[in-house]
Length: 337
Image (cartoon, rainbow, N blue to C red; front, side, top):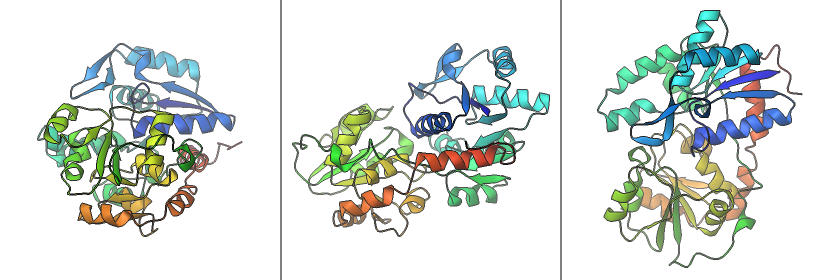
């Protein structure tokens, strides 16, 4: 079948949404399906205020109508609630075409912290956006229950995977020349990631942060003893995971946390708060320590065997994620091939 994927998040952006869509698209193509992606690179775009690496597409309506007409897709999935997602949604409603959506990001909490907008208002807008969808895909049961309590309907599970060939304990290269243990955090350096909760901990050894974002300069000044490595991709990132001792995930607002799976696949135990995302991935599996006392969690994670983390991560595959995604689209007409 031919799928039209509409997304405002696409390379060169680096985040969990882009990783998910890229990996699932690759798996779908490997199954013999065709994926036509409508992304910001096809349009004139401007930087999103506060998230300059995110581009907001302009003048989308006529171009998107032409793209859809040319593609003649069997199914349409709208991945994001930005300008492209809105334009494709508008087209679908005008033409009586079924479509699916996904809830990837807790924008209400982010905007409440950054712009002081009430989360209830933003959730109302998102509920309206997703209401006509044949299915609203969510990464975990906990997020699904939370959205259901807020009035979202037709919620469908869509799990995530990890590239276990890339993220592998064998990727460990040159040892990190810093006092051990090494506590590593990976992700966007932005307020919603709650990095000060990690960086302010009294921990032995060294703290490493991988990623870029609007808080980077301020956190470097505030925490001069931490090591901020900027952006690292693919093999370089995998080597850091494999060489560290504990992965610390301080976010309280992520809907899932792909970096947690990447760490586990690299044999790296996880320390996090007991919130959606870590609870769904780690739970009581014994591959991480979840505690409201993040310092206690980080220290407890040091005792977790690395081989246990790797074995557990092997259960999360992008092929399984892609098959679940297909089933949510049009299960009566789509074959996995």
